[in-house]
Length: 302
Image 1 (cartoon, rainbow, N blue to C red):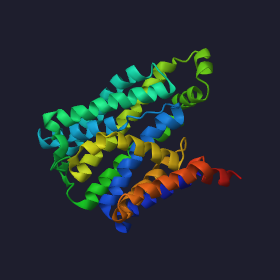
Image 2: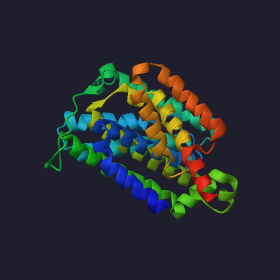
Image 3: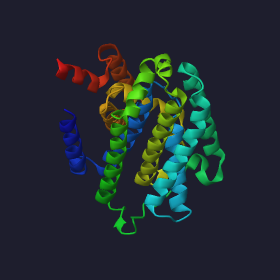
Image 4: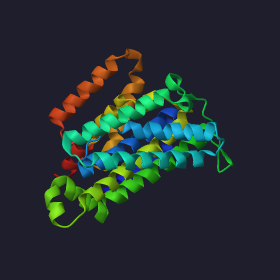
């Protein structure tokens, strides 16, 4: 089943720019990677973060500044953004994992709001106007990323790499310990595992992958804005994860496709798209509690 799913993912990914608008497909890939990173924390570790947009947006600003103001190549900008998100994740995680449940969620939200207000005030971010006109540049000094197809396949390669990291993590001994912590933390402690260390490692890995998604998104749209660090974006990634299937490998990808498609094709009906998205979410919570992919997996097992 996993091999077939991987095959379909690769095939659809390679064909996507010929079926839909490439920028739309790239947005789905960036947010799908963001949702997969968030799912690693919520679905497999049991930690609900309400501030993951801080890492997406911080990486975007750092990447945009590195490429635009400092003149580095796009791959260097992406690495810088990812590293900044991981470093911020280490600081936030060291503070937040000392608490659990709703307290953990509220701490991450409060810290993320600090990042939002700093992004609003700091001069290099552009404030309310955002960091505009970020050049895509040339990959390794050779491949012109201004060409939509080249840019798309670059983004797709990044998505596959990030998705593979998540997949390998959850199917490794480290991932099994994370699941044990999610299911019964006191028992994991009694078995001798340093639970806080495992939580912090998972948190930093999740934030690094979120940063990778944010850095790539900035190059795609040539823009880093306050929207990326706003609490609403943190809420959207929760929605994507729950809608697709929390604790499933491909669920966040499906959730991202559904949410981004609704936003894109429902833009002409204004704010009603929020009502429609909310209605779909409520229906899924009431009738498909495992999410779209979770319910499909149960049907296959039967």
